[in-house]
Image (cartoon, rainbow, N blue to C red; front, side, top):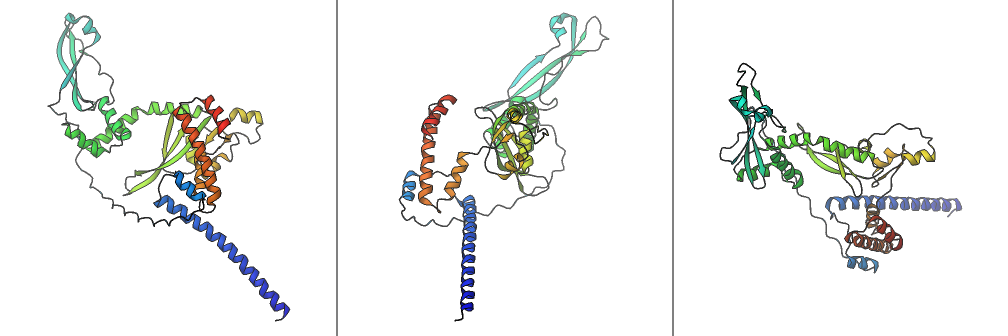
Length: 384
């Protein structure tokens, strides 16, 4: 074979070998992406490893083949209901409920009842609730005129403060609906059935309206919690998907709860339909425009620590804000090692064992209700 021909073939072999190596690496990356997606869709949500399983991996024993995941069940077709054309009527209060009467008279009448003559009354009724029973709160406000001046304008006590002046739901019942829905996660149709078993019928729309009424009154507390979080220099951020119904779309869409947590303090939830960096900005709060050439002392005065996962929206938001630090989370770091178990079972198994020891230390501190100083000392001596 001529030397030039031989050299050409050797060059082709080298080129093909390099291509095989490149394609093998690409195939490995794609396989890892497919495996990660399969685990997210079909795998278990917990990342805990049984100690025996960890020893099994570290011992380089052959692992049994994992059975293929079961196919996901097909979703139910959404159903639609024709809009009701009837006008919404005021909730009728059942007549068989026990009644508590509250008599409300003007202060002038209470101070000198002999000087006034009762000419009528106004009655307001609302449905109250205690666990397991309904009752009617009947507020009777007498109308009076002065005996020595019958031509004067009648006087009547003002209606006590309430959630909705012409509404039939007392605050106790509105609180029950909200607690059932968001504390016990009972949908409105189940609440409707539960209340019907107690002798009072409410349709789902009425219960939903009550929840919206209560939410409107609770806005002031929500804003105070939001202000508390925006004043805090160290918070933990996360976002979690939640389906919601959008009128006219015919199906559920995905929105996000953006969560801000003050360690050892309160939690603040902010809902928005998107998952972009705008959500981080809204959760963080007021963000004044500052020059990029701030000194170290100025940066220290403005420093905010936002602990979060590796989602890119946090990094893109913080890129132009040098006063923002984004420390990571050990739980998310551990997840990456769990995903790499197949690539290096021996090394990854050893690392996961160290994580297990750290978690045991943290569990002991939680059970002992250790304070911040003790936690710092134990971590410095045992977790390093």
